[in-house]
Length: 99
Image 1 (cartoon, rainbow, N blue to C red):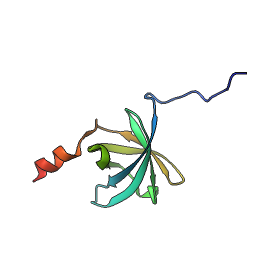
Image 2: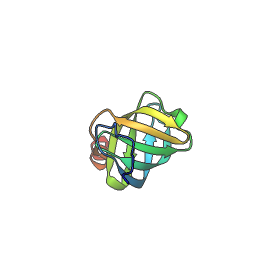
Image 3: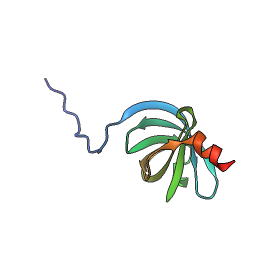
């Protein structure tokens, strides 16, 4: 018997992960979280206070040496769905340029 699965509406496929992340808000605040899945177009992240996300902000993934500008798509409990505004860049490269 076939299994009925909801049709995927995302443009890009997701892959489950569990990685430490930091959300850097425009006002300088930094929120610690954990990325639950990634795709070419966005991410799902667990935060203690996802309601603090608004507008555009940066998602830093230190373990992968990446930073990406994002916007909030949805919040479900402690989980926030993010869409990339720009392609990811190397975090270490940006830190070198700032010094």
